[in-house]
Image (cartoon, rainbow, N blue to C red):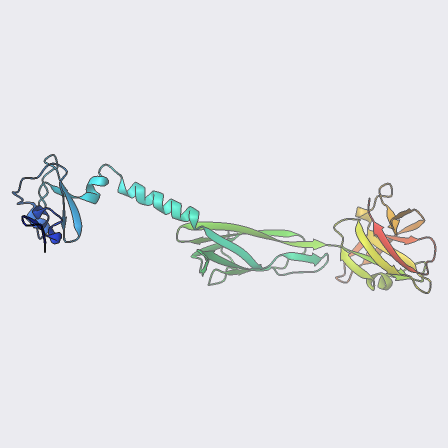
Length: 285
């Protein structure tokens, strides 16, 4: 309590208005008999109430209503909660990452597909409540974080993964790709056996081109480049040695059986002249 001058008294606990301390419980508001204007607010037990003679009579607080009730009057609370939920889902969506599965395999091989995934929300790993692969639950692990195919596959196959958690869904996909290889290396021979070809370096035959590559022909050897016949077009095929176009090429067609037992037609391409040095050769436009 503070005395200001000689005639004024300030009592802090009553917020400068003795009516703030008039009600000690919400029930006291119903029997309120002090003169107050519409819109008067009073704090009771840490909660604010507002008065209006236009309010419907409440069985506990009379003509007083909680401030939050007045502010939300006419608002569909369930709609607000739904909008908040939608916002949270948009801000913190599910994240799905494939941790195992897919990749490239040699044509002729047989693969039983296995896929594993991780699901996170708000940066934390969660256990999915539902999971399907290609819209089926067959083969799904009990923890719904992996799947094993029921039979081997021999050709390129894609799989769609869908997981669900707390009403949210997330989809992903992965592909098991089967492809032929192309072969490159050097040999003193003018013709190659199947074993000679399989002993060369390899790369996936996704195109007929190849970046500049070193061919060590020391001692007298032919550089060889062997690609599936389906990729070869003599009118567009180009060979470059040290940046200069070379057209001295000999091309023959030969069946090649790869290490997985698959046989395909290949174009066996070599330089027409025996080389004795280290060459940088590029195949492309």
